Length: 248
Image 1 (cartoon, rainbow, N blue to C red):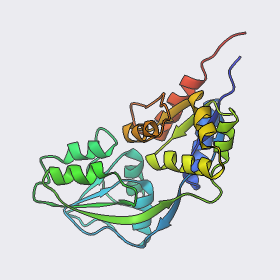
Image 2: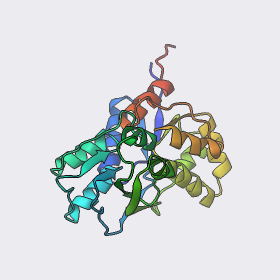
Image 3: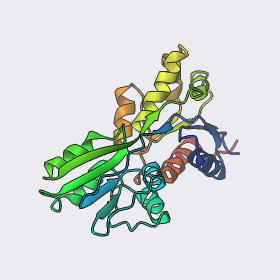
């Protein structure tokens, strides 16, 4: 007999939350979808530069919708396979995807190539300083364009109540902001400490080390960080940890 595994998932309220629910269901889990992010476009597009970095599928889609495309001589870098796939779907050639799908991975991939060179970073308003600081340390002339803002939807937070009641076996955090928004939603309900306690008895997954560090800085113990920073890897690792088969 398999253990019931209710997994809170916080992907944005678009096709990503639907895909997450489908994936978790296919893994035998009971998804608890609670989108913690909503996108507000700024209307801006990336500036042309010898190197342009895109850090999300959302950024690609917003730039493409406004008619932007990389110049033929531009080296286009994507932070990971999902971003790269989105770029290829709109007809752009992706020149670089780092081995490690993180800001630090991008910096490592570009070190030695960008000294004195203009580097455009196009992303959300909550992008990590690890990327821009690291590129500057590598000698790059870095410019950042905010393509969109990430806000907490008004409806977000029912998963915090489930956590406070001990009704979650797992939670899958996909960014530092999802951690912060989860705790903000709990605080608004007056159940922040109860929700944090509920997570302490659940399996908590973080998509990468920056998300893990944020969670731990807020007193949330992280049990799982997948080797690959993708939602599929995160979901699989969380469910495997939370739902070992057992026999009565």
